[in-house]
Amino acid sequence: MLEALTDKLTGVFSKMGSKGTITEKDLDEAMREVRIALLEADVNFKVVRQFIATVRERALGQDVVQSISGPQMVIGIVNEELINILGGAPSTISMASKPPTVIMLVGLKGAGKTTTAAKLALHFRKQGQKPMLVAADPYRMAATDQLKSLGKQLNLSVMLPEEGQSVAELCGASLQEATRQGANIVIVDTAGRSTIDTDLMTEITDARKALDPNEVILVLDAMTGQEAVNVAQEFHDQLGVTGIIVSKMDGDARGGAVLSIRAVSGIPVKFLGVGEKSDALEPFMPDRFAGRILGMGDVVGLIEKAKETISEDDVQNLEKKMKNKQLDLEDFIGQFQRIKKMGPMNQLLDMLPGMGQIKKQMKVETFDDSFWNKAEAVVYSMTPEERKHPEIINGSRRKRIARGSGTTPQEVNQLLNQWKEAKKIMQQFANNRSVLGSLFGGR
Ligand SMILES: Nc1nc2c(ncn2[C@@H]2O[C@H](COP(=O)(O)OP(=O)(O)OP(=O)(O)O)[C@@H](O)[C@H]2O)c(=O)[nH]1
Ligand SMILES: [Mg+2]
Image 1 (tube, protein in one colour):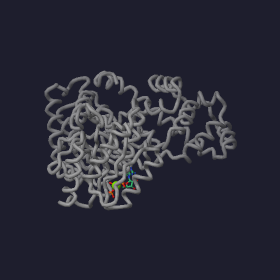
Image 2 (image 1 turned 90 degrees about the vertical axis):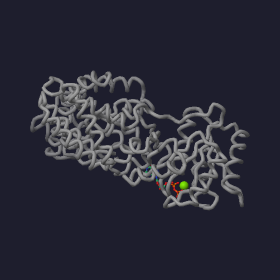
Image 3 (image 1 turned 180 degrees about the horizontal axis):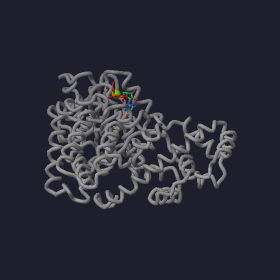
Image 4 (image 1 turned 180 degrees about the vertical axis):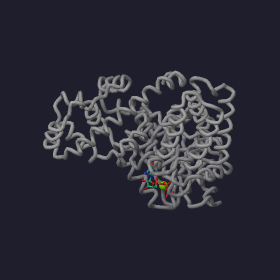
């Protein structure tokens, strides 16, 4: 997600960073490129204009021009302002002081409401809560069935409409049922329409009255781009929305919606949907998201995800090696083995610092399993010495490794070169990070 934007911004900043000090002209030039990158990522133009103006003003106010750490200061300001437009502090679901907490999901047809309802239920259950789902779409059997089957799969309780029951009646009944079952969170999935019409609004308003929800969450499809921002505005005007979940962030949406929504509508983004599966939901953290956009990588997120799958020792090792820039070929493959256990490779690798640039420099489109399987075979055909010190690999060693791994000497060479490039960038990045770290509070 947002790869194109990240690539562009990393490019702008590494160009600026390589200068040492910058002039006002350099700053303007960089800002022009940032502006283009944001517009290309489909960020609302008013948001872009305001963003650029604020960054420029702050940068000049802080005397970045001709200052030794000028470029880093600019990146620091861009990071802070990105976090700002994304909403600053993370916004969580507000819980009722007296349970159950009622969360209503609304949105256009196909936005991802039903899928998201199940994801949220799972999210809360993992936290030890007791959620219940409500299929508040009595007019479409298929919609009801979808939630029913998701509930069955995940072993979650689902309240279904009865024959002839109105949405308001169903909602009232589900609150009673929640109390009876001891459910402390009620997640209500409502009907979607292809446009915002009065029928839909009447139905949702009725449900809202019957439920008196703590949260009215609008689910928006990231793939709809700027249109999502308009939809948010309209729903908010007519209904009053308390939060947003942007779904389908795993697709090839340019991401502008996420960057514009908060600034345009004032509504906080609370979660991102990053896949079709029920565990593909991430709490939205403005600071981490900004870090990802700037290509600084979501190291914290990666490590947290890793913690769910691998041991504390493994994690500490990974953390230490990354910090000390000591990854050799053996670690490379070792980490890969662990990462492989964690799920789709690309999603995880994107969380690593500088990954966008690494891919480009290594001339690798995607790190798919076939790439890794080959790399693994090559590394396993090396001696431990060769893995630690790849520079000793000469022609005859290369031939032997190729034979052992079922590849060609050219392929072995290519992998070694790719590894060298990757290491170079990670090193560069690690150097930058220490400067950035002090700017961003040591993260
Ligand atoms: N890749 C991806 N697909 C998603 C995500 N969220 C939902 N989908 C898919 O989007 C499609 C529509 O999702 P639903 O949850 O049925 O959408 P809905 O808003 O309930 O649709 P209606 O009830 O018809 O209004 C399904 O095929 C989902 O699998 C996501 O985060 N990533
Ligand atoms: Mg649905």
